[in-house]
Image (cartoon, rainbow, N blue to C red):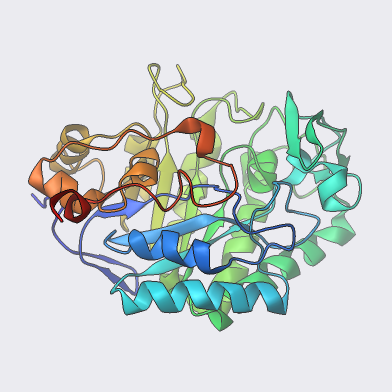
Length: 361
């Protein structure tokens, strides 16, 4: 069986190991969504990952509702990301852009208008805004005549990702954001071609993936799903009925890999009693499958050994350990991360975590 440290082909992307860097929102790109030199330093430090999946990156002003998160709809944002991808490539790394529309969890003070979703609903809790936390607002349902506009936004962001020098793109279809709001039955109450049956609820996912594939080729496109449990108030009563056929459609399209975020009942950052869907998805999706959530070295290797996954994406361990693959291979201790600096400004808790080389210098 392969080890975490063996190479893997993720569609058209040759990864030197099976330790992927999961997408991690960090909020360091400024109000214009333009990554700067500090962002380039952060990603370059982590270029030893088999593949870096960038932090979630807005496809439009309407779809970006996180303060200081990056975007990919303006020329300035493209130029900012160029600095990042060039630096990562010079360090020998590979990086794909995760494309994000947040749907109903966009606050109007950031998105410029009433948030949109699959149906008229309101997310639970509060939004992060530049004025502090504010209650989420009621979303309006996207009209049928607006779906093509959203798909065009995904395609434009994919084209901009290519201009910016990325190695591919990932469609963010997880964690309670727009596409997840279409997928799951407690957020989608539509009675048209995008609601009701699982076949209809996966339609936007399929169409968005096909648009990205038309820009990049399917083998440089990946998708992230979160098929079990509650994500920002979004949940499905029968996840197998929607996520297994969704995975079968992604297999048909021929994407490079599929990433699943699957928290368990004892999750440390989100938990779920709903069973993991990866075993059933594995039956219909034969391309590389990447699993995520609360992995350490032992659990990750065990799931590779059992054939449950082909690679593992690590999130929080990469925050504090820019040289995570080296640390795991050497059995070295991991730096703890500082939650207070996850989304703060500046270099603290971002680019100042020591590597093993720092410790021996």
